[in-house]
Length: 576
Image (cartoon, rainbow, N blue to C red; front, top):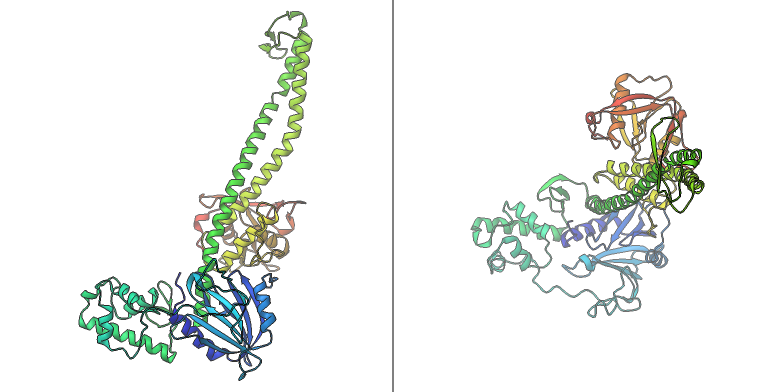
């Protein structure tokens, strides 16, 4: 992930100063352990300033509105208590080339600041610290005790101290080309590495973009550079410093990430706030998505292994109980031939009444024939009782396995992170497993509202333009089948195979053609566990014939008056 460097921070703050000073602070909401959103209002607009001290994505930029969920963090509550209703009157770096921004708050523009929020964008040392006018710390996003840092503790009631000053030389517009080249080439080595070592305030991404703009490979060494190469490189260096001085930036997307200088641009962006918000939201979502996907798959795998083992044990007991009638038949046979028994026998061979085949009956030598028969009758009764007890247990386990396989299939359909909707669908699956007691509640607020499923279904259109909605998880499946479905729609599902519920939306009087039905059947096959098969049986019926059994788990439905089509998942090209 590309970190916010001094150049990006300067560009972002320059844009914020231009559009958001002065503004009124109306609300503070903490999204997670590393991010707060501050509602700012000017005479023309209202939006959310996102301040993050995430170790990989610390930043300050305009972001998305927070979710409508309770805020349980104390840091945000302390901020709104101190700053609510005050005006943001200035946004300044505390010193040249320092990645610490001072947000100043006063009663009204033109008055002295009453409070400061110092946003320290410094990798794993990033922080957000609220102080009063005398720079006494009121609260901090991350408290740093003496045992953690004897050099710079950050604690409530202590004076705020700026981070240690930069030790290396800083870039300057007044530096001559000769002095600059001499400093960079003092020790031979790769130009990228030498630039980073020679000056403070640079980042790997920035140096790479400078080299791209100068048309130089990053691995080229200083002793391989020709005079014209040095000249091109110094020209770009000066352009960068002038952009910083004049606050003239060109936000754009690059092949590897983003740039605020326009170098290596693939797609331009309208403003820096949108650029930073999109990049870091996607990058962090992708991280959370990968971790959550692995966690859910691992948990489901472990649970399913245990359940399948339990089902195998129950099945084995049922197989044993199938011998119940055999024990009774042997007991009846023995009771009919008591005269053939002799003391001390360990086995007796008698002729079966029906098959007239010899039947060997094991005997206990210390018991007589009647006692041995009684033992066989008891064994018969025991096995019959076992069947009555085990059958419902096996049914429950198999139902649980079917449900979890349905969840597993839903996770498999969300293969990779592409949009925030993918992460939301995965979080809904996690919330569902928590509500079904398969996962422990982590104790932190979920991004998804656990009360209602989202409506970010997969959406397709049939060849004749009818809309198709596809559930991404069990909660969305229930939403589609029992809330969204209309009287004229058609409901689809892979037959007896875990998969998504689908709705073909139809207006009154609309009649789908065979090509439309086949299109939806192909989708139902594709969004099922049988995706790799050539042909998959798919059922469809009217939503009024789809029912949810009382007490059934999410995503479970039964249906009647269905018709069957053969879906071909390989015909589906994803375009949702």
